[in-house]
Image 1 (cartoon, rainbow, N blue to C red):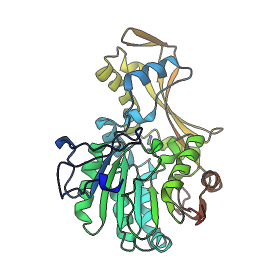
Image 2 (cartoon, helix red, strand yellow):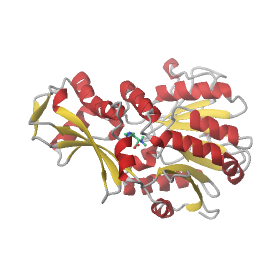
Image 3 (cartoon, protein in one colour):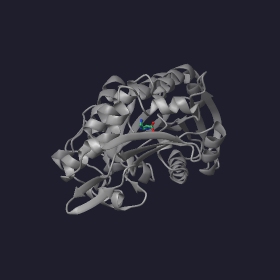
Image 4 (tube, rainbow, N blue to C red):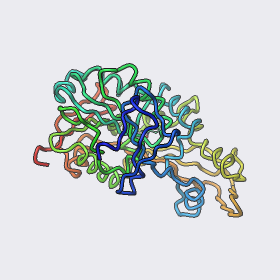
Length: 359
Ligand code: AVI
């Protein structure tokens, strides 16, 4: 397997893996597969990007109506998400950043030297920069993300700034990613997964355990996972965080309707739907919906869907955890909770989970 990943800058065109649905790795010597010269490798597993039309039609026909949150993140949605992260009410990003900074020496001590860091979902880059700077001579960093463009852009820039680290990308859907390719994680230290931002909270608990179980296998015996998990808290704080005054979260949610109009030719009245986000105490999660104000219809390719006043399209769950709940989830997946940190206001938690040596 190892010879199938071409080194980045050394020779072009690059050779890439075939889709991960196919166990037989094939070579793709296509010029279009070139990648950022500062990257050591680009393993493109050609992930299924989803079928927006099919998923919208199925989601609108379903009861309750729902649509996967993965459709938030087109170019406009990703920019709106960045605006959410910067807004006063959304405490998540700044709290986690400050906490990471405070605990960076502890993380470095727990991880040890020459680690291989695998990030699940490449963010804007600030958190991984902080982690790589804190660790003792990290050997390798691999970013895993469904968007190849985003990987090239974000990780290419990072690779230029950290020339001593072997840096590469895996273009894959992390919810369907099972094995680390042999050429990844070559350093002699621990393999450390990194998943900040409480992205885990956007999965249902069963999906979260399944995902964590896969990560545990990828980290291997003695490996570890550093993961952010948003905490249960005063409902008013959550209500404000998902209903910011500037309207970034509302625009992020309503952008789904714009995408339906622009990409699917849907006929609908954008003003007839509103952003609706609330904390569902029983389920322990913030839910986002698009709610019909008055009777509304959405027509797509001859299919007509009628919403009665107050009916919703469910667009996202964001689970919140107690520390014990999150550690239980981790144990179910086979991890050992080794250490957990929270900020002084107990808004957010960062967990260091390890894989037993015999696990
Ligand atoms: C990406 N994820 C962790 C965010 C969250 O808080 O669940 C997405 C988000 N939705 C609304 N605001 C932010």
